[in-house]
Image (cartoon, rainbow, N blue to C red; front, side, top):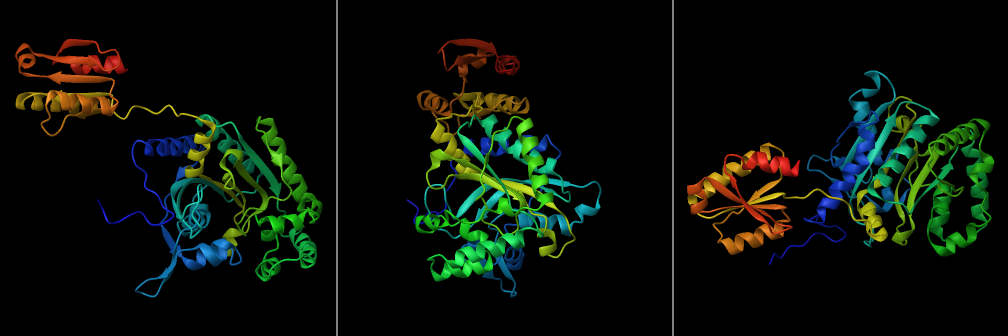
Length: 420
C-alpha cells in the first residue's frame, strides 16, 4: 500500500465515478459552444498581483485563501483561486478585444485552489466550468449567460435549484450606498476584523455567513433602494429577458457575491439539497475589472459553475446520468493466433467508433469472461482454435446470454450495425 495520500482537502477522480464529472463538464460546455463561445485555457498559476487587484485585497480569497509562493527567480505567484481574472488577463495579452467584433466570448474548464477548511462541497482543489463575455455592456449578454447556465443544469436533469438575482449598481450609485451601509455597520456589535472589513468593503459584510452577524443585518439598507435610474433600467431589462425565456429566478436584494469586481448584475445558482455549501455556481457583470488590471475599459460579464457541487446536487436529487458505456465490446482470445486476430478486430472496431477492450494478460476463459462482465460490455467476442479453423468468432450478448457464430470477416460490420 502506498505511503502517500492526496493532500488534505483534495480528491482523486477515479473510474467509474469520474465519468459523471466528465459528463457534467460536457453538459455545461455544450450550450456555450452552441452560442459563439470559444475555448480558452490559462496557466494554473499567475502573478499574485493579478488576483490582489482583480479579486480584491479585502476579500478572504486574497487575505486568507490563496496559495502564494515565491519562485527561485523572485517572482511572486499564486495558484489561481478563480478563473475570471486569468481569462481577462489572457484576452488582454493576446489583444483579442482588438481582433474583431465585441464581445469576445470565451469558455474554460479547469482546477482552482483555495486554502479553506475542508468540508463536503468545499475543497482546497476544485473544478469549474466558466464563461466570460468581454467588451460589451448589454443586458442581453447578462441574460444570455444566465439562460445558458439554466439550460445546462436542466439538460443534466437538475430541477431543485434556484437562481438568485440582484444588482450591485455602478460607479455612480454604489458609493452613495456604500456610505449608508458603513454608517449602519458602525452601529453594530461586530468584531474588529469585521469592522475593518466594513471600512474596506462593506458589501462583503452582507456576505458574512455567521448567524450572529446575519442576525444584526436585518435592518441593513438595501442597494436596490440606492440604484440610479440607469442601473434600475438595466436590471429591469435583464429581468424581463430572463422571464421571457421562461427562466425562473428570485430577487435577492442582499446577494453580493464574494469578489470585489462585480458591478450591476450579480446572480447565484443555489441548491437546497447541499446544506451549508448551497451555491453551485454564480457570476455577474464586472465592468471595471479590465481597468483594475491595467487594461482599457471593457465592460464584461461571466459566470463559473462548480463541477464538484453540481455532481453533489445530482446525487441529492437522485439523478442518474445516462452515461455512454465505457466498453461496448470485450474480446476474449484463447490462444496465440486468436490473440492476433482479435487484437486486429478490436483495433478496427475502435476505428469505427465502437468502444472495445481486450482480454490482456493471457487469461483463461473463466477469468477472461469475468473481466468481460466487469467491463460492462454489451457483447463479448470469444475466439478459440476450433473457431479459427471454421473462420468464425463466437458473439455473446452479455444481457440475454445468447451466443452465435459470426464470420471473422463480417464481425466488425455486424457489431457496428447492432450498436448503431
